[in-house]
Image 1 (tube, rainbow, N blue to C red):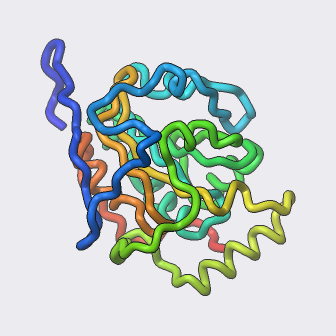
Image 2 (tube, rainbow, N blue to C red; image 1 turned 90 degrees about the vertical axis):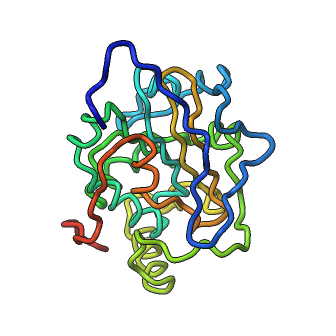
Length: 234
């Protein structure tokens, strides 16, 4: 992004970006849409950080724009591999564009630190254990049968990925699914304040948005995701 001029006005991004040959997802009627303001009641809902500290959702993007990625659950191998690619975004790229990157899950906060170690993710991350924000934003439960195309971020096939997820579940210190396995995620561009510039609610586990497509909307440089992450796969 070019250097900011004095008192710039941030034009809201109100377009959807679609996957390969798939129609853009339409948010649930109960949730907000691009170009609207986030309801104060949603902005005032809490999320938890890795230490269990409560932070107001709206405080995360009060001062600057943020790309906010809601993941299905931390045991989902697709979410794991998607976040591994989010981890490759240089912090300097985000700083140049004055953008924050945030991941939100729906597990207990105790799972945040192990998930970050597993994926190499070092940007902001929180959880919404009661899924209140998921619900208010119209995030779906259950999977819609729809073609979402080939994801550039998923490396495992369904068999190997599912086996790894099950292994992490049974060998972890807390045997749980680290969130509701039927919950779908989504991606938003929010802020400054309660401005909603972009919202996409995933129709199924493969319906996440290509990361570079989202970064382009906020003026962040293109990232090469072809290199393999230097993390241990279990």
